[in-house]
Image 1 (tube, rainbow, N blue to C red):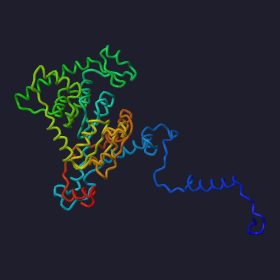
Image 2: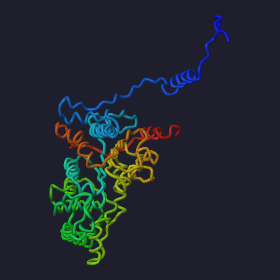
Image 3: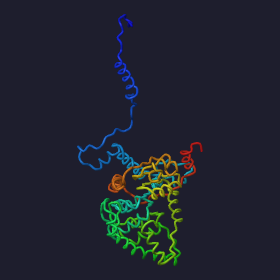
Image 4: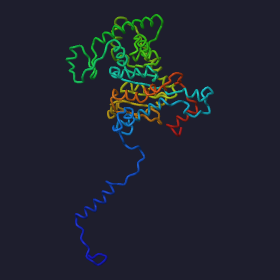
Length: 403
């Protein structure tokens, strides 16, 4: 066959055909043209600049993976701390007492802290105590172990061990293992001696004065009686911060209540009053921010209370749980949005990490930094403020635009 100029046309070999086909498909599929990106560039900390721990943590947000989630969590906590009602427009139906910028500036986010008991067994107890000591959180939720381990540490220490220590050998020595921590049986005997006297006094006050005990009221009493500034419960008592524990009997406290019931039957702990109290804490708040360390009961109890107000406004989860098993522990924040536990316009963050690695760093970059700079001013804050009818309608339309 001749070409257009009359000369014989060279035959294209199979190899050349393959090369041409590969060129076309590579350009079209493998090396498709890219869109321009506007998101931040990935860059970590350069240690040639020296060892600056604050700058290292600042660089996390552009490092990627869970470091970026850490950076986002710092930003989310800062939003909790910085928000005030003065940031919101004054609605036409606002009451006169809430119209002045000075008063609106005092209305702040009510911050909730939920944590599992193992964190109190660990050295995170000191981090949590710092937050409570300086009134940096307003509502707390934990398990029975999160209460009793705090008290027990005032009576006797918890020791470091190893994850690989043999269970049978420890059992024969009267030593209990909590991960790589060790808690001797004697510690719980000391706790029994201490708490039994308080149960007797509570029982007397119930029978004599008609006092109705709830888990949070019991914990408040523990904080008063332990009278030790190393204790989380002590500072919760001092600063009148409620500590809710719906599973108060699921631990050594429950064991002691069981023993007490055989020595003197009739002490009553009312759970219903506490579910009303914890839900009211959410319902009455103008803004809520939640920091949930771990999963299980403490996570669900916190988020379910915030369901009563159409969800938390700010949210940080720190846990290692995964969502593939359908557990609430592993559920990502977006699942909570579907239930109405987190607001639809929130910017929640989950850090997939173990809390002892994360919480001290989070506190260092947020709460502690404010205290160190001298701009932490907790006095005069207002946390409970109702929405006006106009504001409620605006909030409703965020979820249901056609309502």
